[in-house]
Amino acid sequence: MTALETRGLTVRFGRGQSALVAVDGADLTVPEQTIVGLVGESGSGKSTLARAIVGLVPIAGGEVLLDGVAARHRRTGYVAGLNRRVQMVFQDPFSSLNPRMTVGAAIAEAAGAGRRASRAVRAREVEELLELVHLDPAVMRELPSRLSGGQRQRVALARALAVRPEVLIADEITSALDVSVQSAILNLLRDLRDRLGISILFVSHNLATVRYVSDTLAVMYLGRLVEAGPAGELVAEPQHPYTRSLLDAVPRLGVSIRDVGTSTLDAVEPPDPRRPPSGCHLHPRCAVGPMVDPTRQICIEADPREGADERVHRAACHFAPRAPGLNGTARLELTEKEAT
Image (spheres, rainbow, N blue to C red):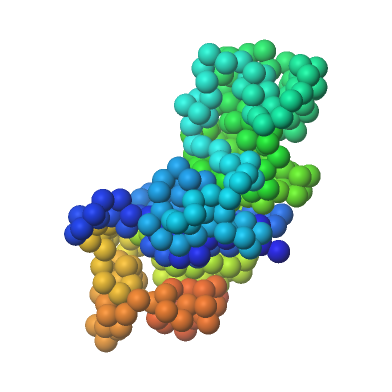
């Protein structure tokens, strides 16, 4: 069953010709008890999509569904309890935690929202939540400034879990952490999925990290979802040129940077998001598109999302799955060390 779904979700900033379409008709599915990784370059719109789901940015079109029921769209806004059913954890936990409130008070405030409970019950709940995220309950007496970055991120997770959400959205929660701490947080997310049966949308620009922690992957480019599928299959046989370029850029143990080479993403400047290319947004930077093969004018003329549901991994590419060099050529065996 699907826990969270977006249909045609669109986010637009500004008006007229200068408007920026940050999210362009995104159809994203997060099944129950599953970690879905949402990956893309900086500026691809992945964080905006996540924020639109929880209502932090307005949406221009489409809707958000929880368990198949519309939870947010332009006309009706929210269904009751959306903010409890879907919780978000941000990249910088220090800015999302009140610096004047102890850890225990911050978590207790969230745990007690909308219900009455004695101080003893609240304290016990806080201890259980801290233990759930692998923190010593003694930190409940500390201020956020006294904790490390990894500890603060665990506190932010505990506070989000205090309302017992069905879906957790983690937006770049490991990017600001030391490498030695990242794998512990990734393992914690998988542990939370297994112990609580919670669904998680994990947003990151790091494909290796996303692959390590996710069951399913969704790839985003310039506001559009361009490919989605089971993580292992998508990494083994990417159907979209953009996904292949992201995989080629992932560092591998024993492979020198000099041996990796330069991808078309690095060789060509990204387009202006306010004036995206026609047809396939990737075509000016595509390794198999009209810049390489001039006969492929369809990439310039037509939106490849039409008919994507019939392609492997719902790839938004006119030539998927038979584009040269895409099928079965990428192999990425990830270890925990490589993922961080």
